[in-house]
Length: 297
Image (cartoon, rainbow, N blue to C red; front, side, top):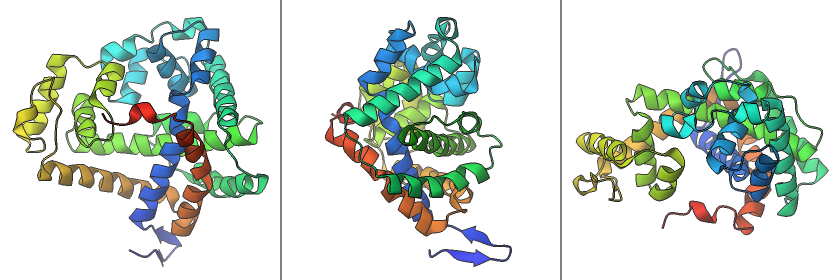
């Protein structure tokens, strides 16, 4: 669908452009959870367990919230996984975690050689800044928290933080869609791994759903006709039916529809241009092998 302009300058977005920029910003944000710089910064703050460190880094923008708030915002983690972060704010307050995150991001980007000229950075900021400034943050807890964080002086890291805001905005929107479709926290993770987008073993290790919970979620999705009936055991690798594949695509399409208003300030051309401008971040980390562990086996 081509973009059109209605009365009052309301922009109707091409949902393909919405998905393209959504994927681009998600990919450009992702490396922070995988690079050794993050683990080193967390260790300096007294936390060596990767799980609690991840939770602290990602939720630091919300302040010293109890683990239950992080659980609500993160959705697909089990309570036992998020409860493990209890005490991270005693190790260091959230502002120190946020500063450490920025240091890790900057060092990692320079280690892998992210190449963005001053002109490219300025153009990317000229596109993403009005999106962040004009976004509606109602019901978008993680996005709103990140939008409130002061941008660091490093231009490359400042761009990454703006990317983080819009990435979390889409994530917050996706949770609304999941809930509307009756897809619970473990169910959505089983569904995601069944698409082949994330290894099930990695998902279960990081989100810490046990065999009984994983099997129950798989059985619920199988009962909906979304998974093949031979994958109800926790040890099995779930596979999508045609109905399940269509349901997954519908959920993504509904998320795109929710996100269309976010990108309206820059329109289809601006969204696609931003996707191209931030691609060198993902390209550099891909070349460095950062995402290798995320590939399904």
